[in-house]
Image: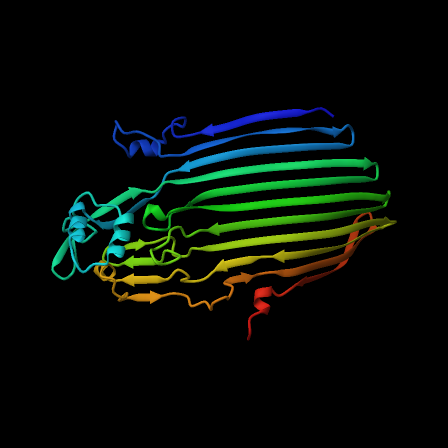
Length: 371
């Protein structure tokens, strides 16, 4: 019957934390430092009465941005001199060259004979384009937002109601694409809401009724568009070990909504404790993933793309019929029922007897497919 509140923060990072002993031994004397790990968790909560002795609430909200050490990434790209040479050549597609120059970094120096990258790539047969190694460290992070909320209501000595709502959202990077321009943020979103009602008919007869809703949502976007197209395809150049375009498995998305209702009753009679209940779930789950939806085009040499020739290794795009939905529906209905008796034969022996029935339906997308 009193209001209470709290604010909190928990923080640790590379500056607060001591340097790990094994890490310190592996570094030179003047370069002792921690790798990136910055975790700052902060939030607040409040709770109290809405109506004294009857209705109460509680809410907690927090955020937690976390930064992690990134991984190493490397690929091959033309040097500044190489791009200058390409810009002065005839017979190249202006559109394709412009897209490649827009997204590809420039190598600082030309590769040596012992490097991972070739020193040159050939374009037009007689033009050697100097190539170098581009290496960098990818960043990594996780931005978390969470809230927990509850409402408790006790209208009488025989009834009580409980409402809960939970929300979690985790956002992190999708660094699958080669070039940082195509990296995207991916969100994993969760909702959970429940309502419970507990009722006492008599001292030996009680019931519990629950309603619930659960939602999960994940989407991997495919940013960017290629001139003349509504999407940006996957363009692979084997001689540079480069994929020009977004994540090869994007776009895709998964949604799962679960609606739930259940009721259970417990009755105590002499040496017997009877329990019975029923639960029903309706799952609605659209899922989107079409392989090669944006098109996969792989060239053994960069020059074939710059000359706007057909891919010489692989050229495929999904031929989804016009108007057809690429969404697969995992919708299904689920039911459970049970009845049991805990029979206390004597002070040393209790027998549990029961029966249970479960039904799980066939997903909608499966039913729509022909044999």
